[in-house]
Image 1 (cartoon, one colour):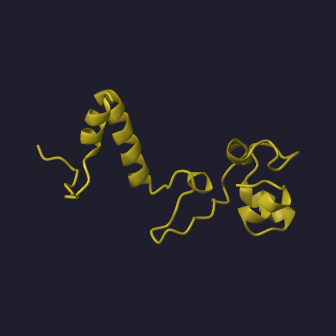
Image 2 (image 1 turned 135 degrees about the horizontal axis):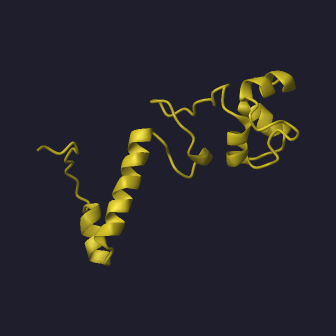
Amino acid sequence: MMSDRAVISTPYPSVEEVASELGVSTREVRKLRRLFDEIVTTNRKPGRNGGASRDKNGTIREKRSDTRVGTLREQYGERFAPGVRGDAKLGTIKEREKVSTLDDLLRKYRIHR
């Protein structure tokens, strides 16, 4: 059975080699591998813009208009869209507030990414 991983030759040691040198358990190495694979396959960059999803050219994608306010509150806090039900959709809030983007809404509610 062939592995679906590509072998890349670099002058740097592998994760396994570094882990062995540092005394990190193989269990922790597997966790790191899964995290790395998830980041690579979902095209997310952790630590920047809340892990915002990006297009192939690296630009941040806009949130979909059918994203629920409750979901956005999980990411941006309870100050997002005060007085609005959690099952309301982002598109509805943008229309009501007369803004075109999520960034405009965040500015309006004074929420920083």
